[in-house]
Image 1: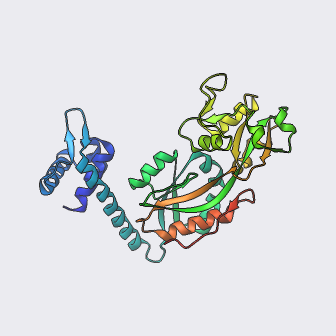
Image 2: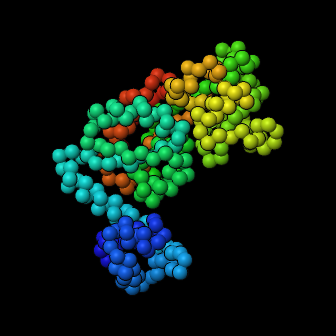
Length: 310
């Protein structure tokens, strides 16, 4: 067994196709197929189930694949250390973030990060929580910005900041006349929510004390895939929604169709965390990114005290 075999294994698992995996690895398909067959003979197990139409990884192959990812990550770390002996921050850092964080936090940190650490190359991806956690476990990203608690023995979470929610309602609505919004006020609104899978929708329901979505009536089909679209519905007078504090900096906030009101309740916030694998070797890069994020946060959010990453 060698590192080349593990690269082939990962490529086939990710592409689901021997030919595409061979192209990715810059070898011929017979060469790649032959090496995988030798690896299976050496291990005494079948790594893939092959048919004329598809390739599926076996349960044992899946277990071995997880180890292969860890090994290749360590190899990449060794190579990175060798290339950046004088600068441990050099090289790419693959960061994922949920859309309702990425759209509003990234504009605050990208230029300061580039200015302070030009050697660090941030590779961004924007997806929902479950997908980001799966990609973390598959070693496809190095860290993720999430807004939900993470209880996983393989992952570590650093609390970054607590972000209050505000109510966005239409100009001219009854809620606009109020200086702040109480829980009782929320019980009477037509609440607009993001589509299923967005943690922001679940958080809004929790704050409004809703156990389930309304699947009947005019509001049942008004579910947006992005916060910006949701705010357009608010501006059109279709209902109200909860908005995280950083989103108030968006261009929509200057419009005349939407009013913003403070929520008068202590639990109306979300905690944003940086999550990464405990086995991830480049801890200093994570620490520097966390410091840049906290240095650029506005007063509209509450920074969490930082502790040394262990």
